[in-house]
View: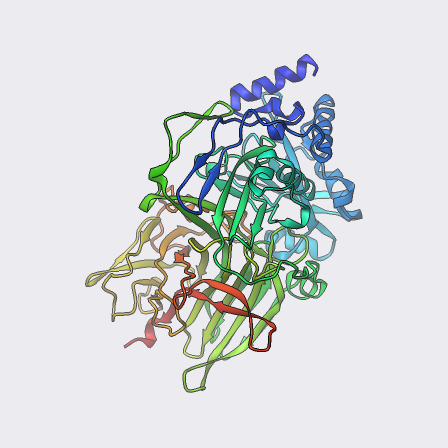
Length: 630
């Protein structure tokens, strides 16, 4: 390595805490940092890789990547472009444009020191990714979206490129956020996981690619370098159905190594391992629901809906009998955390050091470890999300217990192609609209996930927009409504006294007689729910805080970090303001016989055929017009 590159990388190490020099060291993925394996009682087992393991000498994908980085730095550049195999003709044009754009590249140097960046994906632009100005310009042109990740700053830059005019229309930077990873990094993560000696040792054989899933799912493990997502990490997973467990291989793509691995129980399953993959490129869905809006007028309601790249199904511009109700309603993320029991049995007598960092094994609540990732729901093409739109949105009549029509609902199904196999997920977004002006936003989890000790937290973004666009949010406190004057949060106990025994929250206009009571789910909706156990955040509306597609929000595993708290840290005034309500239920799954919840399994039916059995969990609040409550 030439001296000038050593100096540049050493500066990054000192100034930013980034191990810059790792990019040029062969077999880096196997430079393991601890001298012990940490075990916990029962099915849970955390593995910290060993220093004395002999790594394979040839990892083609990784070595080629390192060589390309070395060449890039030699040329005085630091943004690695996507390979041609990941790009169509227009994407190549978009990439060439952004790599010459000063604003897009403005974060790639600090005091003339190069910072490592990768272009992660380039896709045709869909409406939910564009601001209003870009939407107008892209109607008469061809637009693409380019996403770049800065490893040193842990930030993502998104650019909108007009292909016909050959210019960048907009650039936005998102701090402490990470995009979906490129196909190349997915291959590298797979290569590291498939060939690592500790993974081979734990599995008892050298795995094949067909045994591995979820290589592009971002993840973190508490107290590893992946904690709090300061590093870009993914979780390739190996499911052992006979022993009802899965090995999670945590690959740190910032340092290009296996950071840790963990065994976790799957629960009982009869699902065979040979389910065919459903194609991910559903052109019909893309054309009809991702690349254009659908207008709907029904039962006094008018609204627009479309599928987004990562925020599920979005309902926009909602009106009832001509009056404004909401600007946007959507579920932006599902946080998935798994719990490992036995933290008190951990042997912490020997310090564990990973690349100079001391690892502390922190006990979670109830003697648990927490581990998992964030799920994004999105369009079936131009997205590396693994929970994808399955068929298009359905619009159906909403009926009461007597079969009388009381409104309608819009339902969108998102699922992994191999659901209901272990380590695969299925979510539904459901928006209910009633003839009396009420509406409900519903998140549905149909299992199955990677374990039977999971905590799910769907993050709902509810941008209610009343006629004067000046709203007030209030919390019912014993006998009074307390109006929030500044941005705030509330974590429900589920046992509070509620107004008329139903309503805990309220959103109104300046005139308190106009607006909605908010009825949290306590199991009263007769859908088998066990309640929302919700946290509520109210922030002042800002376009770049979720009006467009959001990148990954919050932490999967720090249970006091839902994500929206980042939008209320400034404690801005919100009384008589344009506000956004963030509603985050908390769900605990269960696979005990007769008590299943948030669970799914494949069984053999009476005819000897495979049959899927589902125990859904259904969460979400109902908004009831104030003038309809007596």
